[in-house]
Image 1 (cartoon, rainbow, N blue to C red):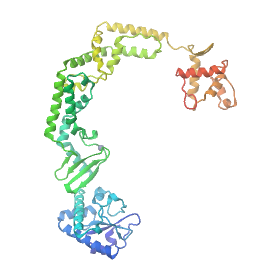
Image 2 (image 1 turned 30 degrees about the vertical axis):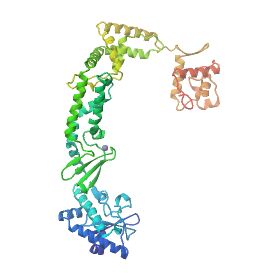
Image 3 (image 1 turned 135 degrees about the vertical axis):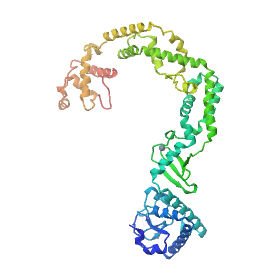
Image 4 (image 1 turned 90 degrees about the horizontal axis):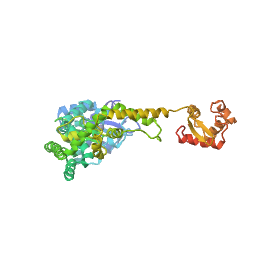
Length: 492
Ligand SMILES: [Zn+2]
């Protein structure tokens, strides 16, 4: 539908205005309003025409293209087919084809300016029109490129922002500082007052880095963005609602501004200082460095025996807990040192090197000497002996069908019988209530059991000579031994 076709008179009388239907009722505009409304329109036409006369031909041509009209104009909303809507439409909504001036526009407040233009004095109206036209012309300029062009320009400019470049180039230091600031090693480094001063500096130095959300470090996030034109500053605000973060792009300068700009000279100096200060602290604690190196050596030593140690641990896992388990102190060390993460190689920067050390419990340092005493060649033989002993124990404790799993006085459930109970429950679709399970085990051919065909099961009458109360107790015992599990309504 073309509005110009529908209202040729209006085009002649108000050439700088484009009537646009808003609201739900109808997209048709029959005629525009009362005498009073016509007077208001004339004032508006005059103000817009005057504003256009101060603008360049190129700008006005862009505006025509933006709104898809054959003349420069601004949209004027009309509702209920003929009445002037009190507020003008915002230009932003037409940007990047979100809404076309030729489609019905709903009356949602975010689409309109707050000012009621009909009530403004002449001067106020001129100012309002000036502001509105400025936004339309800016949006027209922005719309000469597609959204993805702006997004890619903003992305490039963001990556070229001096602070983002600095942060990217110092990524390893920034991350190492954050890790060390929370590291358990701080508790063993000298001297507490130096550490506390360093941590105080970290809070200041890290502020600009922490101000950038993680998904924006150190390139733009991948979420959907909103581009908000800001004509007053000749910029586009690029907003990620998911990260709750935005940058501002200058469309002429092709650069971005962060929400809080950073003093680059200071930031460059500070990041170098914070690293140097930490390295100075670390150099005062040679014993810590040595201990980390000893742990590393010990880790390599343990790696040589990894296969047999893992085999011992596996055997220990499968054997019943109540058994007295043969072991070796080295096994315990292995488990403890398994929790520790150490750097593969040295680094000139102690900050970078120590940030790769992850020790949850620093009391491990106290055990190093004792552990080192185990670093001898006989250890292989000692571990082999433990392994052989465990293998024998495992053989002795191998599960057999006639193992007694439950015993009540002279009544016994062997492993074989327990397996029958487990298999029966496993193949049922639903949970079996306790009293039904007791009936099946006892072998009571009730109608209920027959209807479920339980009387045909191998389980039926498995404990037929047992007193009923012992059967119930035996079921509880099987549950305790984790053979069967109690759910909401029964066993499964
Ligand atoms: Zn995001």
